[in-house]
Image (cartoon, rainbow, N blue to C red; front, side, top):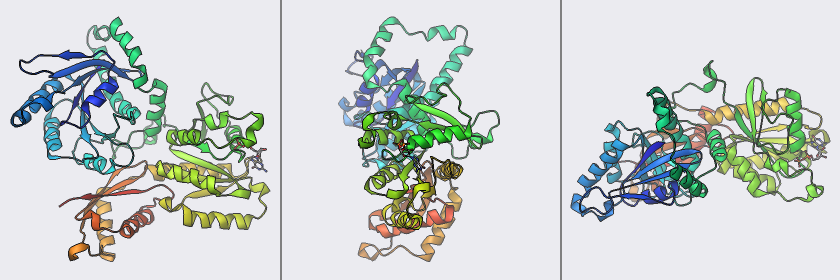
Length: 492
Ligand code: GDP
């Protein structure tokens, strides 16, 4: 069982996370005179991972002047007991001096730390999430303890620590036996079932989200010993655009179907095949599973299914009918893909039956230019699923979009570029006649490419200037057809 300490200043949501991870019966420990609740322990779980959770609650009751010292004491004691520490910040509030104080303790502690940016529901936490990178404790995990969002990411972040623990237990004499759960704990785990994510869901999501913890790590493909990780692909679109035909064709063509789901069962959660030696995993075929009903053509597009498929995927292929390209529904799916930060490839299917090809192409270009500006340069491929035409091009476009989506630019290069951009077009004067200064920038993450620009007076920088930067990033570094995110952070 992995012991996890929850650490952070008051009010960041430690107890909420504690309760979310813990079973119902909590062991409250009184181990110091005059202190009501020093540390709480509970057994809990996340997916299939058994956890022992240590909470450092009760700080709120301490007198203010003693707070700092007591916090340090408790934090250190919890750290000593833990295999890994979760340091919570309130992403809506950003990083406060007190958070910095905790980070300082944690930076010198031998216990590994995962920064958790809590209260990340909706968009409100984005700024704080960016700030959290600056704590110097690795990539933060965005989470909403209250809403239960992001637990799959937390699971993914904890996984290596659990594996390390298991390895240590195996190495120790008789170690593995010590990890056996006692019956009482096991029962509690059942009760806690609804709070976590199912193991399948967690694994699938963890797989879809991937790790980009180490920007300098070579891509998986570079390592001959490890099989390359499959590209998670979703195929979405309105009913009758030819999704099922396309999937069958793709599997047929490449003839490299593997895994237990071989034979294209409609109920498959994932279908594996490969293209040019690259393993591809078709994720969440729920949208396709609905097939076979008589009312098929009348069936409405299920937004929930589509959104689910998008969230499981790295690259999304949106299949459209050439004779009705980019209608309202197509556009709203495309926007969903971009908003979810996935790479998008548009498949203009039934090209064999297109009535006016020139008109279709014109409409595609017009729509891409006017309606999907958040991801300029989106790839589109005309094809016929029925006749098996241009399927290679579609898959090539998917691999390409995936590469761009994963791309990272070194900080030095970025900042030389930023200097050039601000020299060519200085930011406009802000209020009070002072110029906004863009100090430096960094790529906070890939998948999708996300940048943080540190500047004075961020609020005075007009949106048009942000667009100038984003478009420049696309052109200079080739971030075409994937969402590019840019956040402004204040720095003095
Ligand atoms: P889904 O609902 O998106 O899975 O669509 P289906 O794959 O069931 O296809 C709907 C209809 O479009 C079927 O009658 C297919 O035969 C037809 N269809 C699919 N792809 C093509 C294509 O490339 N060209 C033509 N002409 N028809 C197609």
